[in-house]
Image (cartoon, rainbow, N blue to C red; front, side):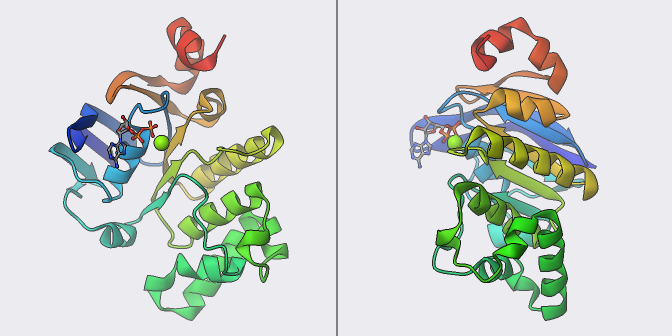
Amino acid sequence: MSLNVSNLTVHHGAICAINQVSLAVPTGKLAAIIGSNGAGKTTLLRTLSGLNHPTHGEISWEGQSILGIKAEMLVRRGISHVSEGKSVVPELSVRENLELGAIWRRNNKESKESIDRVVTIFPRLGERIEQRADTLSGGERQMLAIGRAIMSKPKLLLLDEPSLGLAPLVVEQIFQTIRDLASSMNLTVLLVEQNAMGALKIADLGIVLNLGKVVAVNHAQALIDDPAVRAAYLGY
Ligand SMILES: Nc1ncnc2c1ncn2[C@@H]1O[C@H](COP(=O)(O)OP(=O)(O)O)[C@@H](O)[C@H]1O
Ligand SMILES: [Mg+2]
């Protein structure tokens, strides 16, 4: 079982954002997707979660095609997406934001259990459970966005630049939490990052995108050790 993408092509109007991309991520593995601005990383994640529609290609998850399935239905199939920019509802409390992540379950007991699980993973959210989301720090807001995504008990977690705009120490904590989450929940994770080194350090495998194409796939450590990847993406 795995996530399989083959020959995927996605356009935004005349722009080809994803060009004949094929990749596979085995279940339970954490894949870092790195690449510079405009490489197509966000488009790839949005296509996997049903928000963008491909021109060509195939996507399968757990052996079944998920092409053409609506985003809401994909959540029920275990696919959860945390979009760029710490998407939480500022006026709602931490608890209310988390509840939104499990709203389609309509089951208070399950929702409560899920909140307990999130609070165990992120004790800082537990301490601020009745606080409005707009009073949280950047790092706490990112934890809330991830917490909301795992309320639906996903099997595939798509994370778009979770480290964006966070202080270095907080970035380290977020990366460590993502690693722990993936291992403890046996999650398959696609972690999109401009912070290539941080992402590769916690990843099992790395995928490098450039101008909509996959230009390298390897074990994360092998990419860190690859002189071409180092020069282009790791800055040394
Ligand atoms: N809604 C859109 N309309 C037109 N072009 C877009 C849109 N979204 C993204 N693009 C273009 O698609 C390409 C890939 O963008 P994106 O997937 O956001 O890359 P990344 O996340 O790697 O920075 C870029 O050239 C970008 O300008
Ligand atoms: Mg992006």
